[in-house]
Image (cartoon, rainbow, N blue to C red; front, side):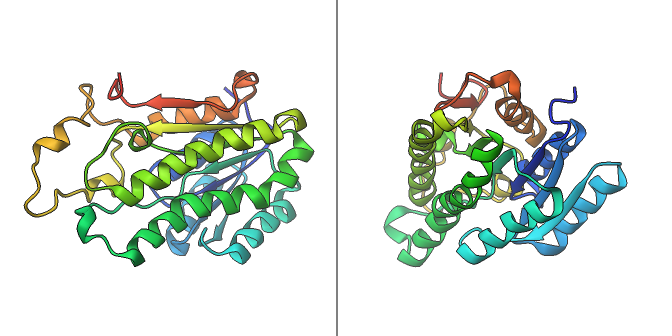
Length: 249
């Protein structure tokens, strides 16, 4: 399929995991892709690999918590490729800790990256997406829908992303911008590979959020994102798509 021929996508968190898989998927379908991530060397390597494979791609170092860095990333995308049609907000972090032991510093950091970073990217990209009648896909989580123990900040941030997605879809729908969210369950990414049960916690609480089909691969989530971002989903907006192996069934 070549659903993104002559289109430009900006993907955050593109250095690894779902973000990297999304950049690869969109590029394989013809998109020019700006790969953004705070990990400068790693995201440059992703863009270089895409370019070597014949795609149009570039990298930009971006801390999504920084409004100036976000604005520069969007501006660089427009300067390099001339337009913006797809924004994939994938950048995110997870911390597993007893809530009564969570620090305000870490709470603020997680919300700043996962929720405020998503807002900042949307805010900077929207004028360009209005011009192209483009689309936004935000990365929420099953943690926004079903309690995940020891992830208070992460769960709160992903719930906020889901609410933000719905709000933006209504506010900008008549201007031609579609906004949707993905809610993955367990995915084999660096974030989840580092998951450990806090000391003294009941490991049985993990079982209630385990998909019976097993963890998904980043490419499977990227495929869902590509569908939502494509014209095939032209009447899909303001909603969420579960990629969770029936975890929330």
